[in-house]
Length: 79
Image (tube, rainbow, N blue to C red):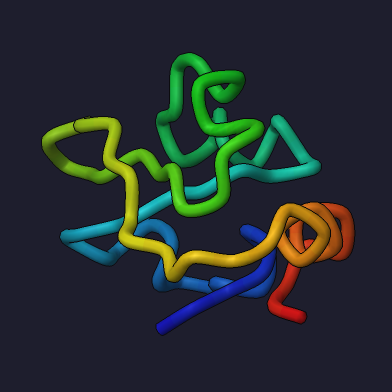
């Protein structure tokens, strides 16, 4: 399951054994998921916090021109 925000995850947020939390415009969502340093997730597309091991991971991303990456980051989605 995927959710754009914590409220959208419903009961999955609390009951999922494995979770990946990415950058969020709502720091309280990250705190509720157990992310201690949400700033580590900002600035690089694909950077996530993996639970339950709490590892910081970088998901593989296709090469893209800088403009595309900036547009994707500013809109919060794929372009």
